[in-house]
Image 1 (cartoon, rainbow, N blue to C red):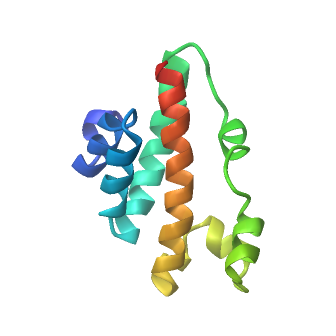
Image 2: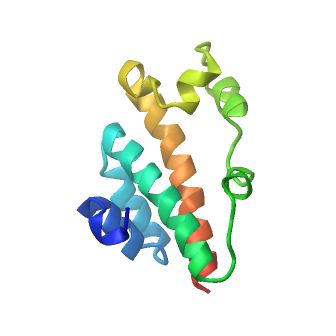
Length: 118
């Protein structure tokens, strides 16, 4: 999906990549379901943008900069199966927890995009 076809809230996040505080404020205004969409779009955008910049990144390279799911679950005291967290299933059962994990991942994607731009 091309950036111009992303939802407007994702396009706004992309425009604010170099403005950490403005990006964070925009991200904080999103509900957990929108955060799922934002993360998915930003993953795809990050991978495409890295290729365009001549610095292609794999999902593994991006993931290596994020908090491991098992560590996150241990830190927040979650006893659900790890697959629930990885697949964002908990967005329905525990939206606040899912939102916090998503925000952490999105913040890393923002940082990677900002680095690629410079």
